[in-house]
Length: 174
Image 1 (cartoon, rainbow, N blue to C red):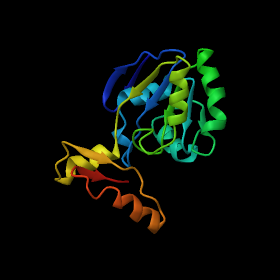
Image 2: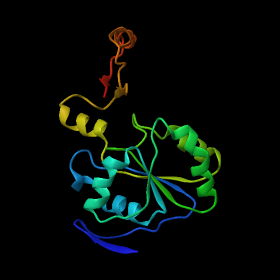
Image 3: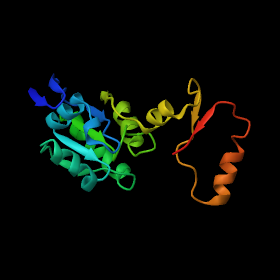
Image 4: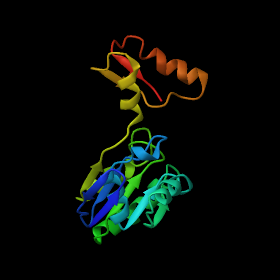
């Protein structure tokens, strides 16, 4: 299938019975890749962290692929049905609200069990807040430790930071 997008003509062959992990824009909708757009257009369904948020992206690019919520509160419950659908030959895409899924976003349980069932998982690269922040920080990013989100509670946050006091590499947190 060929489609014209702002960035040019692209052609993507969607495989059946696989999970695509598609990076989405961080703030600027123009940051999505042509391959990401084509993948979201051609899969059987999109698993979205927040369908209300993701609907804006899909609407902007005229993508009418069916979308289902798939987030931290329903991931474990829905994963077995999602995996069965891929076993039956459907292709699905997993997206988060912004950036690359599974980098401090839901989806780890699904990907782990998808792979354990012998189903292929294909990344569709794109924006990642971690890489974007490091690239403009002026800090040496040749080696770094990513700590995800720090605990919200002050005591737990202090404990977590205390365990990292001897770390000599750049530390990055969301």
